[in-house]
Length: 321
Ligand code: SF4
Image (cartoon, rainbow, N blue to C red; front, side, top):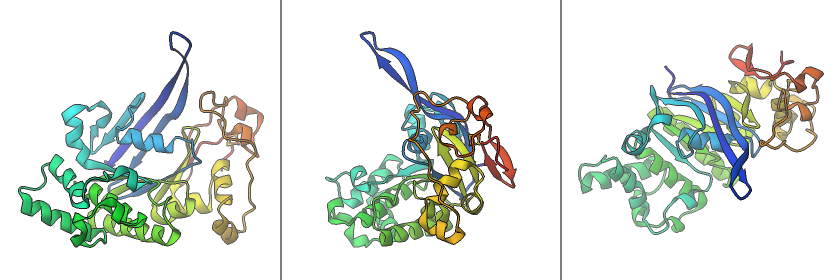
């Protein structure tokens, strides 16, 4: 059984207008998305901004109420949980953010930020045990345990991300949703945080859903990659296959825009014409058809379904082969 199973998940935001605030349309941020994450696996999630990847991460964390579908974590549908039941299950899934500074209370010491998670879930029997756990966690993420009394502003950006990771790890989660965790950091610091996440995964068997717009980072850390466009999954498969032999024209265009990979494969750069269409009124048929360089007449009317094109690699395109 997979650790996480997402079935037909939809997150639609109603758009209201007029004196009576009638709903006249909806933004389909996540539209009928299904996938799974295995124990201890990293699934990379990529797409341009506005494709729905952050909303999907938030819906899995139940920070965003889904419109329809189920999110089954460890055999339990968390979309149906609320109140105390949800709080108790929160231990199993945690999130780390792009800007750790905004998610760390500036008036709390780092020790108390980490200790708060231990307190909520009653994971330390007494003060001594609490202190010991805090020190262990700081050490595990490469910070000096003696710095537990310092405040977030006394740390660099990379160190603050390490604090965010220590706080997430405090409750021994099974899954961490990493939302652009290295996008705000310098390249050299990015590599340190990625290495730390990989080491922690080896030691603790935690799974990651790694959300990023940076394909090179995602290829490095993920076993599988999922590509989203306008709220839908357009391709999913083994990381190497998706990056080096993409099947969907949108994935091909995304990858051709990454300079390092372009040099490696001598692949021609595919420049997509036009902006991403609005998710309020997505195009008919294949949502990618207005920008697709190989679109045919049927692409305007027939919605492509995800099909397995090669071992474990699925794409939603009529012409993929
Ligand atoms: Fe392009 Fe048609 Fe494939 Fe959509 S279904 S990606 S428009 S070829």
